[in-house]
Length: 343
Image 1 (cartoon, rainbow, N blue to C red):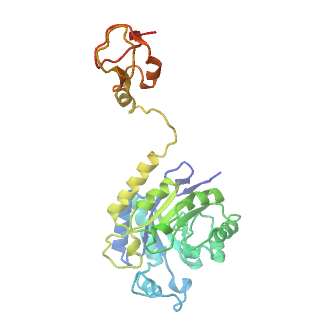
Image 2 (tube, rainbow, N blue to C red):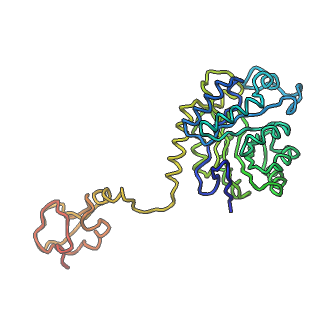
């Protein structure tokens, strides 16, 4: 049975609306005014949460050995040294999120970063690069908070190992289908994996999307994703390592609005809806006369057929009337009644 997980009072999982995270990442470029405006825009767009990142560069990487990003002109280490938010800035953002009324989340990229933000977050979001860092993940799992794990750059056997390691420590796990390309080829998104992950792990499955638009997010929700993460940026003209995979605030609004409409449309009952009933009465076909028909004339395909509205004898009864006779004189374009028919 797929579990339901509580994130700051918002239930995530089976029969719950998709939990939509606006990923602020480092698109604020270290500017708190920009970061707060991202918070405000995410709230206005209807996102459930906004997420930032806590980087302690010397804790998460060596200065040498990490190649230049293909989508930015600065080594990641240098970028983070310049633009990463401080712990005090994260605290300020958490307070602002509380004031605005949106859930604050943050991704730690090291054990120390996780310990520092533990009191700020209701759940931990773990990036794809950390999925196989079992020592660090085990420490985070012991903190007892829900964990949302991205699965880019991994195979099922690696995910198995991570889930099997963490589950005995912390059963509040969620897993994100993800492709760690920036931006990805659509052929590499593999939305069908969402169902596979759901069946394999029986936990809430989501989708972390790095495309430059919102279409695969809609597809993910239709496939059953219960968590959705999308990078946001105030202005796509702004440079940065996540610029090419981020959407602007009006697109986030379109995303949230579209997701809620898709969710409303995901029922599985085939019935005649109340709003269909008046349309059905005229849109279906009934048996009508094609010409004036004298009494005693045998009904044939030459003198009766089917036309709208559907308020007379249903079209499907045509074969049962053919070969019988008119009980009285019938005018052309007349809806035949059972009393008009004799053997």
